[in-house]
Length: 258
Image (cartoon, rainbow, N blue to C red; front, top):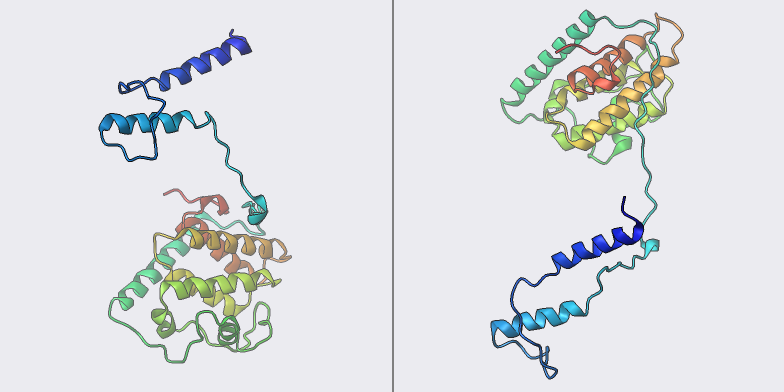
């Protein structure tokens, strides 16, 4: 076993190997002026050697840490709870197949041309406007079951939305869902429709958004006390689609064999 002194000598020897001259360089005269442009190739090499001799073996940059913001690391921890009813493989396969069919129909209609919505849509960054459009009120939507108005995700609206707008509105819904204790009918309809509009392959930020959506659905589902709760099936459906259609398998209740 090499001691620390021997190891240091071996490392220094290795550095010397790297510092061996690749080109023959003559003796650099004392009156050599590196500020004068080199006239020959030899003078250029001598200038490089002279500059290299003035450099330290190891240079450490001085970093002003006060200019950097403290970073926050989000750890992806999904809620793994036993659902009130474990969805069967057959049920999940059926939901994924139906969802795939809906997406194919949307793609077919979209290929026919540019569609104009039947109503005026809010601007992309108008979160309050989209809230009012989706739920028909500036207050929070009613909880699961009943409808409180609002505009449903009409085909004309969905076909007029480009991908940046789809992602933006989906992000709004995920943020709104984080503040709720249940899933409303309107929000379930919009979430399903927006998922159907997402184009593959997913952008990294969209993939992260879907994972957040699935975790929020798991959070809401674990709080349900009855198998007859109207939010149980929609929440399970969204988790199923994110996990099994969009390939976030670690979030699945039951992984479907492909």
